[in-house]
Length: 320
Image (cartoon, rainbow, N blue to C red):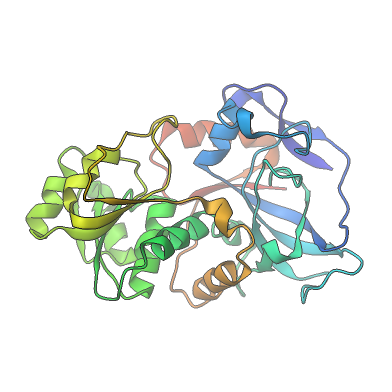
C-alpha cells in the first residue's frame, strides 16, 4: 500500500510517499480503506521528532504521521463485536504512536471501538476534518463541565479546534466570547460566538472590557498561556490543549485561584459515543466540516509547508 512516511526527522520535505506492506484486521479490529486524512499541527510535531521519546517498539516503521481518517470499512476481524460492516463509510481518530501507525496510508487497522460511521451525505474529505479537532474540543468542554448559561472564552476561534470549541459550547448551552483577526470576525460570529474581540496582545483586557466580571472558563486553542489568564474570574478554569514546554506554547503564571485542565485527546481515543455524537451533529449541520485545501498524498510535503505558513482556516486534507 501507499503511505506517507518519515524516515528521518526534519522539515516538510522529509515526507515521502512509499510502498509498505498492508495491514490486516485481527479480532476486535476493522480495517479502513483510507480515502482522506486531515493534516494537523500534531502531525508537524511528529514529523519534526518532538514525540520521539514517546515512541515504543510497537509503533510501525517507517514512521507515519496522521490523526484523522475517513474512508470505507473493507475488513472486519473474525470474532469482532461491532455493528460496522464492510462497505460502511466511517471516520476515526488515529494515534500515530500506537501499533496502528498514523493515518497517512491507504489502509489503517484500528480497534472497532475507535471507528464510527461518517456523517451521512458528506464526502470523505469533509468527514476527515472532524475526529481529532472535534474530540479535542469535546474533551475540553467535558473537563470544564460548565453549567448552561456560563461564559467561556475561546482563543484561536477561527482555527479547527477553536471553531469546534465555539460550536460545541453553543450546543452545550454556554455563552461564548472569542477572539478573531478582523478578516475572521464574521466567520467566528457564524460559528456561534456572541461576542468577538480582536486577537493579539491585550486580548484578556479586551475580554474584561466586554465582560467586567471575567469569564467562567477559557479554552486556549491559540496556546496563549499566561496572556489569557487575566480574562478568567477568580476560581475559574483554563483548558489547556498543549502544555508549556512544547514548541510554540506560552507558559502559565501559576495563578493559585485558577483551575487548569489538561486536555489530552488520546483520553477520548476509544470514546465511541463522543465521536458518534460529533458525527450526528455534523450531519445535522450543528458543527462545521471546514476544508481549507486538498492535496494528493504525493504532495504531503506541500501540505505541511502550507500548514507551517500559518493562517489556514479549516483543515488541509490528503487524499489516497
